Length: 245
Image 1 (tube, rainbow, N blue to C red):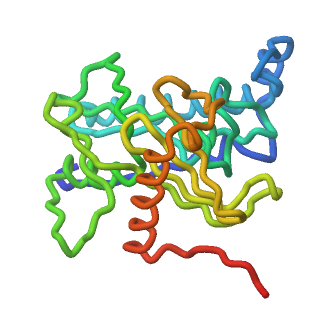
Image 2 (cartoon, helix red, strand yellow):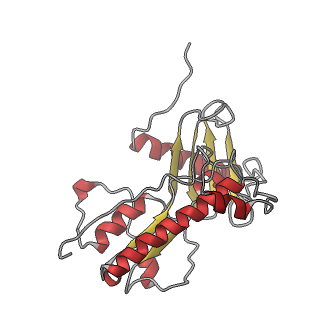
């Protein structure tokens, strides 16, 4: 207990194949509605919640609560075949918000305040920098971290970032998962498609459900973000799909 320790726990649920304790599945039967169409999936989520509760109880039992950073998050949005992510559009495997936005809850004793909600866009790579920060490990330039520590969000300091980038250059599940990349800068998000080089532009503050494509109405913004995204793709040597002759 005297040295820094890192534990990463990936629960398999909620995920296919859909299985949950019978009593939890029964609890969610009859509660189906818009966006809620799979009682087994509901049971999986509650089972996951119970499992995380046991982890937190064990941290308490070991007397480590006051010096343990706890982060809860997910790797992608929910799969549309199981349920949906409304009001967000689409789900896992898509570059729309239903595929990108995930829960993020952080308990950092002496740093975070219980019940606080912050709408600042962050990305999973920030968690590496945050964990190193909490452990007192100084990253060097050679480490080339892609993220930045979230500490300023908890202390009220300035947290500035030019943009967030996403790269998903392949088909997944079916052809509607079009290969592409995306950039979010401020309130605007642009998606670049590789099958036809088209773009979509959305104002996530006014339209988080991404119902209105603004690419034609705001061509200057679309072109600026497309160029910024392409520069990032070049800088990172990102793999870009191409058509075979």
